[in-house]
Length: 104
Image (cartoon, rainbow, N blue to C red; front, side, top):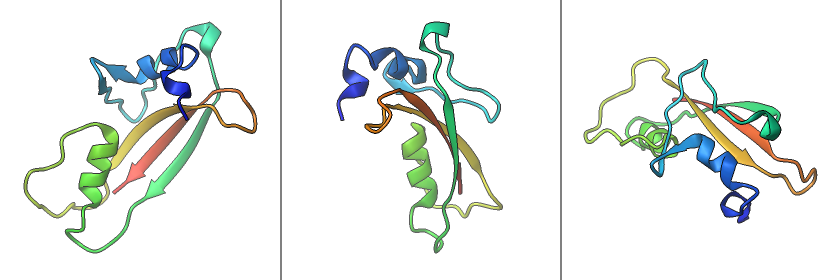
């Protein structure tokens, strides 16, 4: 669980943070890692659905490291937010970079 804060995991965490805030990546962008630390990227698309006003947009903003909207407004259509998260699965023991496309 503490792999990201270990010396081995810190470069991966630093690739997605800037001044202890999560970097915002565009739909076609990704974190830059040195060639020695290149890892496979695993992509998932997560679709959030639910009743109006329950906090789907606020959850996506919180996970993406951006401020949540101060007042409720209905999301028109679908907003896609890319989110990167490095992890080291126990089964493989090799780091991977998860690319999550959060659809709200």
